Amino acid sequence: MSSRYRPIAFEVERTMHPRASALGVADYVIRHAAPGQHVLDLGCGSGIVGGTILLHRPDLRVSFADKYEYALEETVQNLRRNGLEAHQVRLADMAQPQSGFDTIDLLVSNPPFQENAPDDPVRFFAPQESMGVPAGAPWWFFYDQILTHYNAGLFIFHTGRRCSGRLHALARGHGKRVKVKEKTVHHLLPANS
Ligand SMILES: C[S@@+](CC[C@H](N)C(=O)[O-])C[C@H]1O[C@@H](n2cnc3c(N)ncnc32)[C@H](O)[C@@H]1O
Image (tube, rainbow, N blue to C red; front, side):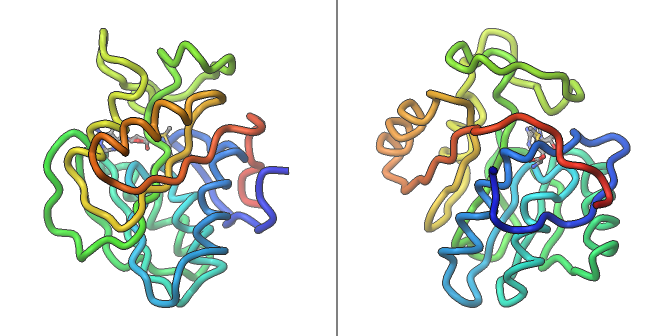
C-alpha cells in the first residue's frame, strides 16, 4: 500500500499515467503540512500529487507547474473533476530560475529520473517528455536543477529505490532541506476511480 489517502479521480490523455508510488509524497504533505502553507507541485503532469493533497487538505494553498501547457490543462480538468481549485497554475521549467510563484513552503516533485537511474531496477514506459533527462546527464539531473533554481522551506521528492542517499547528499550541498520518498510499488492507479 503506497498511500493511506484516496487519490483524486483523474483521466489522462497526454500526461504520464500516475503510479501509486508517487502518492507517498502526497501522504507526507497531508500528514505534516502546517495549516495554510503554500505547496508547489513541480512537474505536475496529471495533477495527481498536488490534487490529492488538496483533496485531503483544503486548508493548504496548492500550486501546479509543468513545462508543458497540455499538462497544465489536464491538471486543471482533473482538479475540476474533483471540485478543487489551484492557487496558482504556471508554466515553469525545473532547469530555469523560478519566477512568479508566491513564497513556497513545501515543494513536491516527481521529476523525470527513471530513464538512466542505474540504481533503480524498475523501468516502465512513460511519455518521452516525462523521461527527459538529457543524454549524458546523471539520473539526478532534475533534482539538482530544482535545488539550484527553487527556494522552498522543504523539498519533498519522489525517487527510485536506493536513490535517496544521493538526493540527501545533493540537498546538503545546496544547504536545503529535503524529504525523500522512494518508490515502494510500481502499479498504475486506476483512472477515474
Ligand atoms: C515523472 S512525470 C510526473 C507526473 C506527475 N507528477 C506524477 O507523479 O504522476 C514528470 C513530469 O515532469 C514534467 N517535466 C519534464 N521536464 C520538465 C521540466 N524541465 N520542467 C518542468 N516540468 C518538466 C513532465 O511534463 C511530467 O509531467
